[in-house]
Image 1 (cartoon, rainbow over the protein chains, first blue to last red):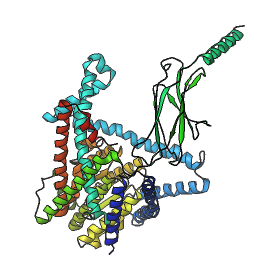
Image 2: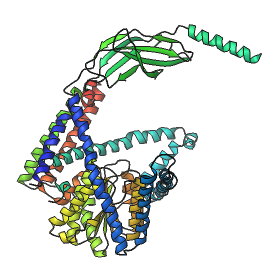
Image 3: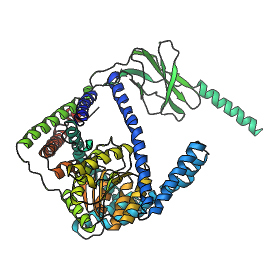
Image 4: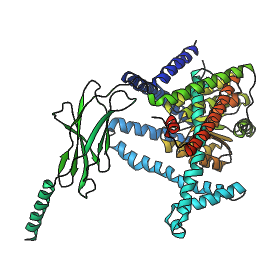
Length: 206
Length: 378
């Protein structure tokens, strides 16, 4: 019974919204927009569950003195501090919360994001090592493409940007589209599997 | 002296601008937006003959509910634009429009009033008939292959990435190290996330079987709640609820780079034997995959994010590309009904490839827009 109700709900609502996709009228649009709001309603208890999980995870780590438990103190302390500063002092511009966000959180996020540049270089080095014929083709293609995209390439030979553009628009786009076809069909199949109750992993347990 | 001369010159230029008779745009036409909810109108006009002039600024769109006005100003469209879509209208009301050509000197010239026009509410999207036919065909294919799957086993080609999942779980068991499962940084409304959750269910069954520790740090609140249930069900299904712990699935943060940093930290400190990345990924994909590669873990990734696939291919041992992510749950479970849907997917791809070839041929030989129009979605 615990499974029958959600499965029936999924089937009925899937059929309703499949039909709704083809009906542009105001009633149909309102139904769609209102239903999207449900995600927010469902999200509220989910936030409580998630925060509870976060606190339990770190408290357990500290209590059991697991490896690197000290990091959990930093984590919980920072989270608690941000929450208190926001609740007591407000989150408007110029308040401590916003200053912490601007001068501590944002630079930390930017730092992690900046790691991408380093990782890209190391990933590119691994990919472009010409060990096999395919890797050599990849290396040459990347070399021509990169040269074609920078002013130096055009000054060396005017054909380089043209070849670079062709590589992006023809072979690259063709392979992207082939993947996108598969993705589209895969999405539709997953939806159908859920709709027909064939795929039930997402339901969890009783 | 110089200052007063400049003032006189400016006044003369301004007067000349105002006297200059700017020619108005002509042929203002209003049409109802097809396939909408009756709240929009499309406007189109012919450019003013003075549009090429250096002082020409653009067109002001004006609307009224009576032909005599009052007209309210809606928007200023730049030179070169001769169309405008007016939205959020009342379907029970008539509307009148005029377009005013303006230049930088302040000269203005308005078109004739066009109207009345009333937006019309439609009850079927005619432009999506092709989608309807395609959907019906696909559903029919799935149902046919489901029937065939009920009767007997269907052949499925080997997928190295998915065969490696079992191997990876075994390796983690032998090493006594955990498996890290990352569901990406999207919400539950993303189908890739749902596919990731479906695979998580199968992986949880295997970790329950082999008694391997599993760690699932989550990014989204709702995904967290669902992931917890999915893992719990996996352990129950294998008759090992005693091995399940709520701490296996733990929420980290909903900050993208914060999540990437936390997962990288887990990889560096706890050194999981296997890292699985299944779901939707953005810029954090390479950070996660490279951090994992540095620890020497077996890494299997699956995503439909085309822009992130090259990073995963580079940094992971196996990568499930696009549709393989959606086929993974069926492949791992080997349930005949689930496998039937993969067959329907494959058959649909054959149909699409056939249509692409046919379309290309028609486009080259006949050069008729008819075929193209059939496959454009409005």
